[in-house]
Length: 245
Image 1 (cartoon, rainbow, N blue to C red):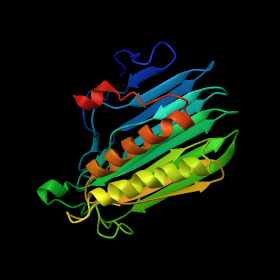
Image 2 (image 1 turned 90 degrees about the vertical axis):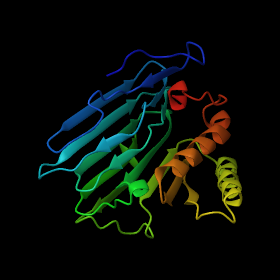
Image 3 (image 1 turned 60 degrees about the horizontal axis):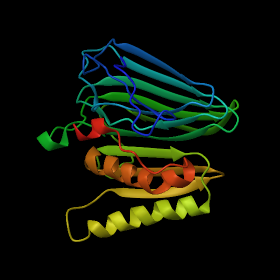
């Protein structure tokens, strides 16, 4: 559901909050979201809170998100985290189709289990994809699978993040790395912080991170967005007010 768009930056940019009234996704649910930006539109999409996949007794829960961004349009895809509870069985697919010189800045954050309660992701199964195309040609195809509750490749962490932005150059990459370095200095001498790295594939900025919880990853994504938005999008940051509620 969408209640109504907001325009804190004026009429040129629409802030849209995607709401899921049931507040959770269970086995057998099949949710499909289609989004299209046309006629030089600029949209910032986010969510009012975390998306939760709950334990399933057998059936798979599916979430498919397909976004088409027409030539001359800008999409900022800034959802809050997706949480997969112990025993969840889920498939998620996010496909971003860019046309012409369409601009994209987005991230996806996933957390496994409930670390604050000492609950891991035992018994769960998950397949997730993030595919980005421009004019039908793949820019990034990202997929990982978790089976039998085994979360491999995260160094024992329980949260993972991917941030992607088009139109990046070396200056954007260095600015992103400066944000990451500054954040790492802030956590020195405290509990172990997130592990984050950034690279560039042609003009695509790609940032990957892992952490014990989702919150520090979300905070780093916001910091990178704030630091690079003026160059990538041509606007200073305007934080969605739903993040403060």
